[in-house]
Length: 115
Image 1 (tube, rainbow, N blue to C red):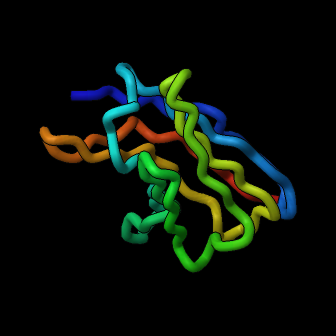
Image 2 (cartoon, rainbow, N blue to C red):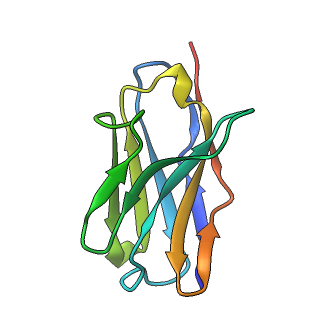
């Protein structure tokens, strides 16, 4: 069982950058998969990025080359560095993980890209 809390969202201009953080309530050393999903108004929730214990990553096609996921097990944190932001990146971003007790989601943090 793990609780997830996101932070770092906000308003940014196109081409700008943000770094999102996800704080876990327990050690993530034994948690294999952690990552980020997002949901824009009127659209389905979609995968942004996933990272495993071994450091393997997977990115959604729309963010490849612009976003980078990382994890710091000592701090029980997962990060999403977002560069070259576009209007289409506007969404609520959710931290995500799977454990032996199932899937877990954070409350979400709003990212708005606007001129």
